[in-house]
Image (cartoon, rainbow, N blue to C red; front, side):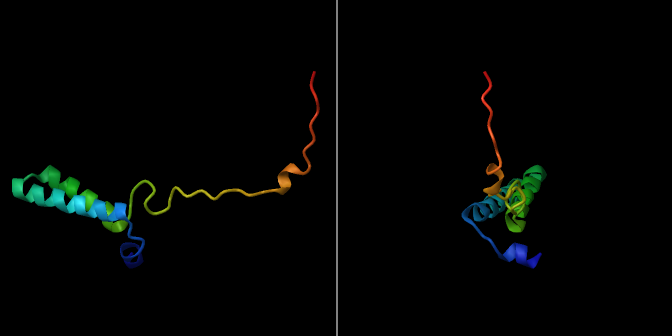
Length: 78
């Protein structure tokens, strides 16, 4: 967990944390619980690098198989 928090900081991750902190501060100033929850979610996503593809969950390796096309034969259909 410590490694996830301290490594792989990018611009988008920093922006998520900043936006979350701004939302939390506005929620405290306006005494709005819903905005506070939204700010906590934004901040948590940024700090823990969660989200759609933030932690590399969407990564799919590229298949590089050059031997698959060697045995292919084609037949003309008329």
